[in-house]
Image 1: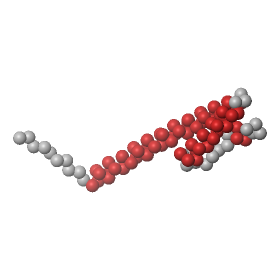
Image 2 (image 1 turned 60 degrees about the vertical axis):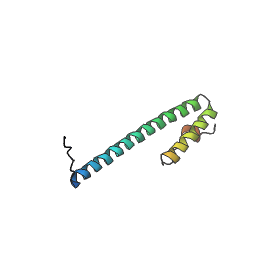
Image 3 (image 1 turned 180 degrees about the vertical axis):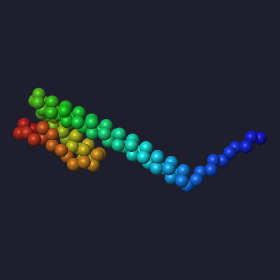
Image 4 (image 1 turned 120 degrees about the horizontal axis):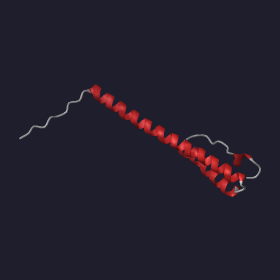
Length: 89
């Protein structure tokens, strides 16, 4: 009957493993945050474009969505976009 070997782990290797797992998760979270910020920049462009072609109702709705995402999902303060700063909205 073949014997199975039990893996012995030292506390130092567990500490390194735990740190690398924590770092991997942090790196992944940072990558998702950067992707979300890039998407918000694209949304900013779309809002400005729609505002520029006088589609103000659509741009206002998107600006509200953008504000909600920044405030509630990303925990960042709102930043005004062109449609929020003009008299046309």
